[in-house]
Length: 272
Image 1 (cartoon, helix red, strand yellow):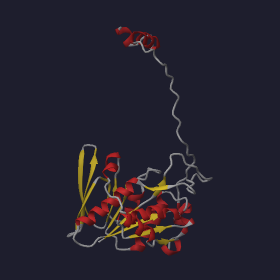
Image 2 (cartoon, helix red, strand yellow):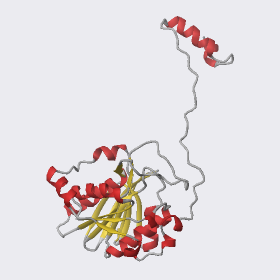
Image 3 (cartoon, rainbow, N blue to C red):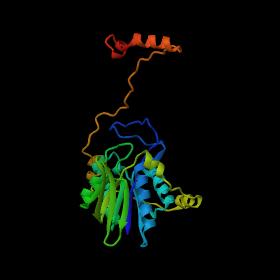
Image 4 (cartoon, rainbow, N blue to C red):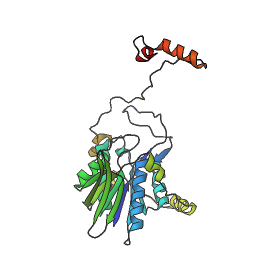
């Protein structure tokens, strides 16, 4: 069985800078693996531990060369292979162009039984890439899952996800795409940490790097050329200034001062 986990490296900063096309400027800024993708990776590793048959896990990422950092982290956790889709032709991609590139990588790898990825990335927060991949591959999908189990014969997965009125349990045949939800509780549940030996092996391991020629894609369908989305403005919201008054320490004086600040028709003032 072959499981492909799509991972994204995001910037480890709160304030980012943009280029003239309103794309993130990543040079020189440290990156980390997107938390939801890390959760998806752990789902894949847990599935392998539960199976008696061999399960190959491949980490696939699209990004600049420094995205190797997240792929090597995946290797240190137990992934079998790391593949990076990297080229200037892939730069400035929106969700559609990103999905086009990842699908080309998935097709080149071939024979994928299960594709896992985070439901959304922390930087873009769109939740669109997973469904787009499933649509382009024309295979079933289950989104925002919180649990996953595998039945190898016949091949299907059982996924659970939280809904507004309870928990949904969905069975879907393979091949399929599943996107993994993440929140603060599930982040704290993460128990997989590499050993020093695993870290060393991951740093020495060879990574496969493919560009647009390796994938055989039309450059007009990837990167900024294949992105119909136009970002016209990006800004950091500013917190509104709030007026505040320091009340005296004496309780009676503090109450008197507080009542002075309340509107004349306040029910609290009337109650007094």
